[in-house]
Length: 223
Ligand code: MD3
Ligand code: FE
Image 1: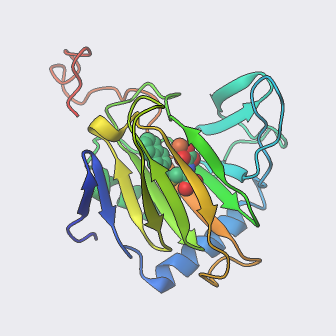
Image 2: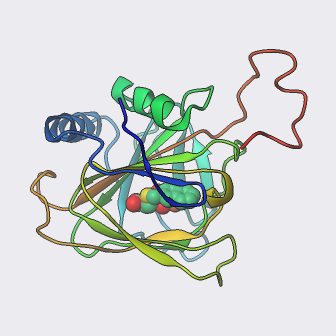
């Protein structure tokens, strides 16, 4: 399913153009079909309530949501109250092939960037399973992605993410600060209405171990 990745930095693996154009098209139409049940909405910042510029929805048993009261994982859509649609099989297989993690992803966050939407520098740390990498799929317009270290003051580097790119962030990169500085207009025709879609797949809870021994050492999970 996947070729050899490019090692962009410690814990950062990039599969450039991992998804063929026909697979990218099928994924985007599947996402907009699923979004009829779980519509894109604008999350709000904790405390201030300022709306994100990015629109979001989720797939899977848990969705990442944000409002005035904080960030959290929720089994239901904040507007419809319904469960999130299932993660498509192709994405579960991609997760397994790219991460080799012994349990399926629980959350596929779908980020929709229209116009000048961007995402400020942040850490993903609302998950218990920090031993699992995060997997990102880029679709549509290219984006300038920025990644630093585990301190906000660490130096950052920029990486262009193109449609069909797949990246995993694990081990030393799992808690790295990262964000999307800019999406480059007119660089792809993939997304109807224009823009960029990012799929971020995450394991949220620690899986039940498959053998009694595997779960014994919770203090030093294998990265
Ligand atoms: C590095 N999304 O949803 S994907 C996010 O393109 C998020 O929409 C961006 O950051 C986007 O949280 C960036 C790349 C990414 C995702 C998660 C990471 C990089 C990461 C988690 C840890 C380190
Ligand atoms: Fe993130």
